[in-house]
Image 1 (cartoon, rainbow, N blue to C red):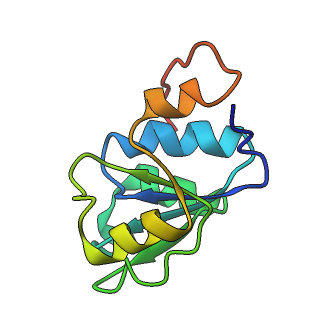
Image 2 (image 1 turned 30 degrees about the vertical axis):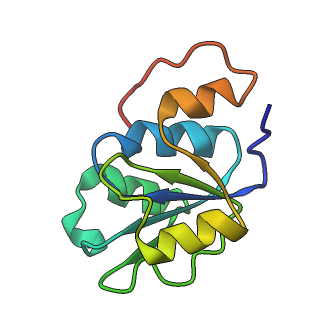
Length: 116
C-alpha cells in the first residue's frame, strides 16, 4: 500500500474526474501538482480553491515538461505514449490511472466524494 503523506504527486489534467482525487490526495497529506494546458483562471472554482490550499499548478503549452513528481495520476484522456509522459513513466514514476486506483493503494476503504 502507498502512503501519500509527504509524497510528491502529479495529476495530469484538471478536469472533473481529477477534482475529487485532488481533494482526496490533499487530505492524505500529498504534495500535489496539477498539470493542465489551460491557464489556472480557466480551470474553474474548484481549481482555484485547490490553489488556495497550496496545490501547485503547471499550466500552458509546456505543462508536460519537467515532470518530477514521484507518483503520476494519468487521466484517461492523456495518452501514455506522449513522449513527456512515456519517458517519466519508464524511468521514474509510479502511474495510477483513477481515484479507485488511489484508494486501492491506501488503507482507505471507502471514499465519499464531496464538494471542495
